[in-house]
Amino acid sequence: MIDLIRMRPEGGVFMTWVRMAWDLVFAAVCVIVACNLRDSAWRIHGYAANRIGVSRLFTPTTIRITFGVLGAIVITETAVRL
Image (tube, rainbow, N blue to C red; front, side, top):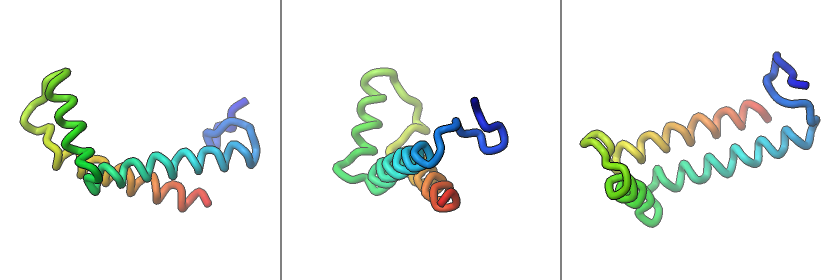
């Protein structure tokens, strides 16, 4: 059953720690892309440009800013959850 107030499944402490670990891994990936480690933003842009086609607004800078904001939000949410 789902706790509708907190919107998390009943799983007790274990599920809370698993969720926090997942959030931290996702936040780490977002920070890696935002800092452009190993040209990750350029690789995402190149993959999208070669496979699906992209507009001029989809640049590596846009990718870095988006992932930076996502990472900040997830880190803040995880810190509040502690």
